[in-house]
Image (cartoon, rainbow, N blue to C red):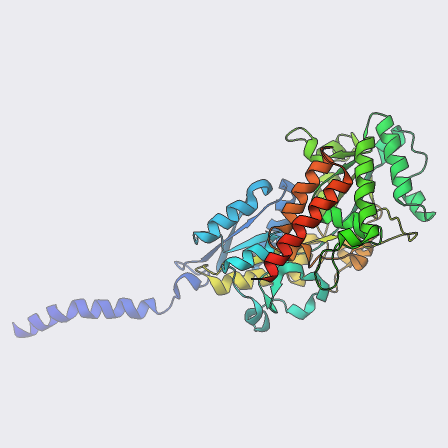
Length: 437
């Protein structure tokens, strides 16, 4: 009886020991894809049109193929409330593991303390990419005190898209490319061409209030809004003032149509595809969608200049990818981010009419070899001389405040002089306050 009692008492203990030993063959949520093993599940949020989202998904699929222990869910968020939703999620510790961040509010997100610092991981052996693989000028507002909080997913130099059919129907005798070849693709020519479009009942150019647009007009006139120390100098820089006056004049004449005055749901891209407008300004993100419209004839042309030079710097728009400090899979999220922004990740996304061009060195051929549109090489040319702003976007909220003031000028509610006075006052106030922090 005593032996039977001892066996009965030991049996449950032996069973527990066997279960523990058998469990040593798995590693929980970070394990591989073998039978019964759990996968690491990551989430990624981003904005974008349906075609862009397909481009993003390419990289997710490729990463999952190379890392079968990981599943990544892409969560699309409408661009018009993306920032607000992201801020709310971060403050509540409910953000996705990785997420796109717009250049206009990158500095604001850094100040929340909710973004993971990336320097140490990028220096380690698990990272697909190193910081020194990117050009120095591409970081914009994603660095603070030499600490990296976001990596550029790619880059989008601003240039003009033009609709060949619309220009031809309006009686414009030369194409923008012909003007460019003659060295006459300038503000005067742009005014003349958009004026002809307006007279023919078409929209000449759909203008926007965003900082990248304002900076592009200023820079293509040889002007500056900031000095090297970050002081706002619009009131002292005549070339910058000329840019404001030119845009105001074009709006008053009807050559430019303000995007903010269009009916809800009717954007410049939709009007371009329906042959209602001659020019829109953007990066490469419109190209996949435009390319799917086989009846649309379009091409690129650099931003018109007013300096006598054929080309001048325009803005380069960047979006960053960051990692939530509260991610439950922080290391894996950083690893995926490093893949997404690496040469391999950017090649996967940007080849075959991708939505941007590389922000990393050494893979420009995926753009220059593109067959649509004809002058794809202009994307690289404009990137090589373009500028990623590191001043306007670095003061949290400043870009939005200036854009809201510009809105009134575009709507015809105030002239260029009053607009510049208000912009200067607001900029100086916010910069002074930011420097005191």
